[in-house]
Structure formats: structure tokens, C-alpha cells
Length: 77
Image 1: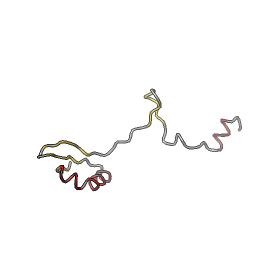
Image 2: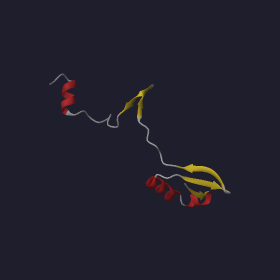
Image 3: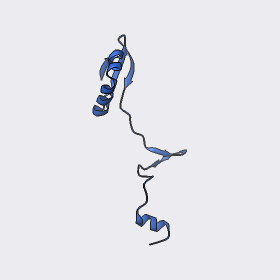
Image 4: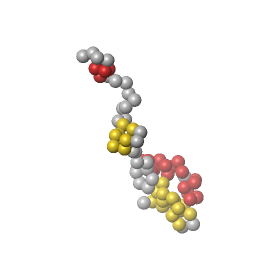
């Protein structure tokens, strides 16, 4: 894990964010030689439905239904 000072992190924040996004590697930020924070990539979590933790909502949940699926819901064949 790479380490940078708080001064360097402040001066190069956008570059550090891009680096973390591209490499997936975390960066430790220090203050007076002591680690104080870790800049790490976000881990995507599946969408959940209400209070039902076992039910994951698919990414395409909000997409319109296909014509075949819509016809089936409307009683068509």
C-alpha cells in the first residue's frame, strides 16, 4: 500500500483519486508520520429491497419490460 503525506494528498487529491480508481490499490495518508486515513476504492454493494436482506434488486430493475413480457403481464400470449 502506498503512503503519502497529508500535504501531498491535499495538493494531488484528484490524481490520487484517479490512481485508486484505475489500480484498485489503497493509499494511506499520514500526518506527521502517523497513518490517519486510508483512501480506498468503493466496493459496489447489490441493491436491497426494503427490509428483506436476502432479496437483491437487479441492476436492470427500472428498465422497461420487453414486448413479450409486457404482453404476458397484460394477459396476452
